Image (tube, rainbow, N blue to C red; front, side, top):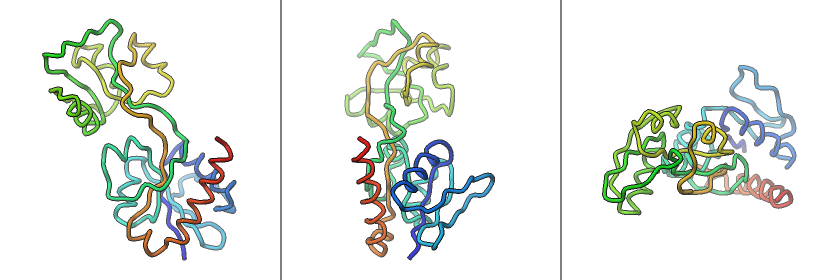
Length: 209
């Protein structure tokens, strides 16, 4: 029975494929080029490459049985899927960041620029803090520099971009990493195959950490 796997395009796909080959799940990893769908020798696994934000959509709708998605995307979109395994790759942090010298005024409504609207709303709601969300899709750090927002909610990996723009982390909301997720119906019908993949990946990850 073939297991269909949705992988995010880019470095995370390369790392996941290398991990799957090392775990014995894949026999060959082909240079993608412009091709999007690949079937491993023997047909036990078929994988395809999509934009990172689309992985949970493919899995939730059953086009993919399993997939690899960042915890940031899972938290933001709350897809109806099973989260099977922390792959401990693509590690970073979801943070509140602001310009150096920023002073919060708790009684005022906070202007928050972010791509992660639901995450920001959920976090500040847990604090009982009123916010105005400004949705941006890129160059989030520019918003406080241009006085369009007070803070930003964004992913921080090394912090280099923040330092270059005289900014820093105010609060860490959550640690982020790539997760293996599964379609709920697929997990019922292909449980043995999916559990085998999960187990092989888990054993390899535990050996390396």
